[in-house]
Image (tube, rainbow over all chains, first blue to last red; front, side, top):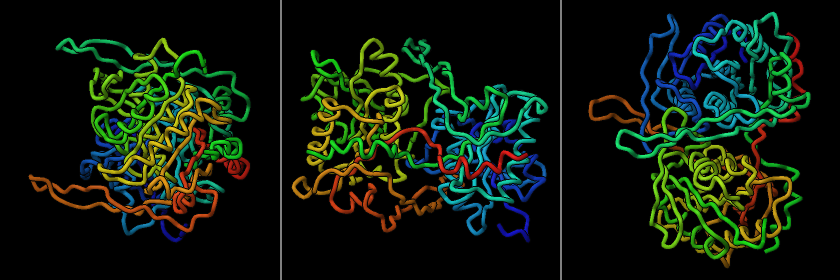
Length: 259
Length: 259
């Protein structure tokens, strides 16, 4: 990072540009550097790494954050990052991308489904150090004061000291007052899963519909995982990437080569 | 697998139930076991791991494959797998999920954006052995004859011998006649990336729009990667998972714990 200028901070999310979570990130980021917001114009939870291929996307300036350059975009969270990088900030160097604060956990397997984390991941694929922040509180009225402190500390550390061997952090914050948070744990992705069901109903014309619901099942998680850290009052920080190879399985499935 | 009955094979894709690629998989799978198709009712390329949370989804029987139980679903590829597992095949054991054949490569970083691979991954999260198949030909009129041979061999091998240390294979097939394909390589995800741009235009009301385009950039890839295998005439098979942790980065970013 060139320290002679203020760092350029790209802020995005998946809950949409009007969500309180992104406002809390903007509030933190504007004290650290120059902020540009490019966020979805509507809620996009669960969009994963979706991109818009079969239709165009649009964006327009937003005055929602006083004194901050902001755009709302019709695309997915990943589209927002692509538009920011390749159109809006085309000729500039983005020093860090921060995404969130998500209303709800993105620990464990949730990283796969999360638009918040996918937006941050997209920036990391472009080589930009990126952090996705999520608070373990789904409520719209969630208290983001601890999250703001955590974000402020981590954004400054990543800008000053960099990230090693990865470009992306999945940061989850327990639903606790700041003074009860025990600290930060750099850890691995835990192994919870969703026990899902579909709520059945009928539309006004009598056609059956199915609406996804379910609950997150957390097994006894060992120390060293994000789920353990959160359960024990720590902020979890998982260095994350986009190589999905299961390395030990390469040698152990060589039998598939014999045709 | 219980060998006393025919294996139950769930077939899905992201190009939609009418795409030639899924027809080729159904043709292969029906010779091996009992086939149930649950696929999107419209093209869903680039949907990644998107799920539908804020609206219900619907499905209805389709007669598109003669003699085969098939449903078209309004949701994303991942939704299709969830509906298949938790509603349509709720009381049955799915022996394998196959997704594709995708019209176009899902090698390297493309796995992240791919609805085809995300559908297969969702099944693997549910513990079902799964394979995503993709042919390196984007054309609707692509020749799937080599893909059918590859799928037939791999589905049988996975049903008979199982997968070791993973539940998901990302299989890409070069655009070559079967006799020119040199064999199968079990390998790791390569490191290509997209060089993207947005095509700018204006809608009928004069508002600017942006449409994603770009080209895949493949560096000199070493042997052992999917990109190398495909470049050299092999089918690539990458054992894949959903743990995004970058393990070496855990210890090397412990400085972030000091707050």
